[in-house]
Length: 327
Ligand SMILES: [Zn+2]
Ligand SMILES: [Zn+2]
Figure (cartoon, helix red, strand yellow):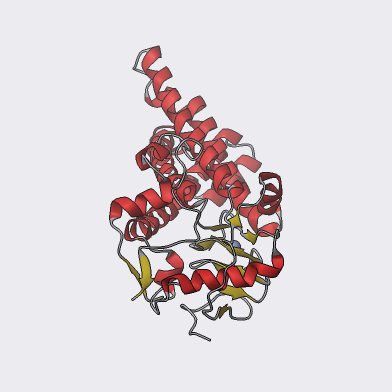
């Protein structure tokens, strides 16, 4: 029995399979059917908190931008200019919502084909034996899921599933980020940063020119005071929404910067957040271009314009990591 590759998360530790060549055919790790995968993101209260947060921020951002802040800020511009700016803001909104949904739906949970269950272990053992190299990343056996899992897959104790190339479990989205949905998560972080920064800019100008001129006191922008004023009938619901938006957008900016930064580093270095945090001694020999290709497929930059996963698919299946080894 060989040493385990890095620390394992959740439940009992996985075992590295012994190296014994066999004649069995390849073991396939398949994606779960979409209908099955769609059930998972909506389970439990944790995911709902993140969903409410995202839906609130995205929809109130669009509503307050189109109805109040943009017409006010660009009041001196002609109608077509305001129209195109509204289209641009709507485009940011669509990118946030679509990438959020894709991150939730294209989960990276894995299961092993059951066509020849009696041969599964043998096949995984052969794959381990192929390289016959002590530095090769190994297939392991997850005691909880009771199945063989490929290198870089890990068990998530929150999702209670093994996740392909597990990066981390995102508690805001309530889903694990792994091989299939990391591309959407990274793009979502980018558009959240753009959307929150734009929204905060317009919202602050609107508040400064309207609320402050009305009351003359910054104290009125303290959210409990705004809420109390609304309850007493001094301000409208629109003011409450706009002030709450300023707070949420600021929180969104901080979170997006953090997520974007971390993902940018791990993706370009060809690693995962799990490997970085757990100090897994992984050596990546592939370059930045190959690492981006592995996550986004070809034409990686197009993912930032629209979710391009249907047109440009990732080159591998998340089970083979030829350019990655134990350092
Ligand atoms: Zn597992
Ligand atoms: Zn998870």
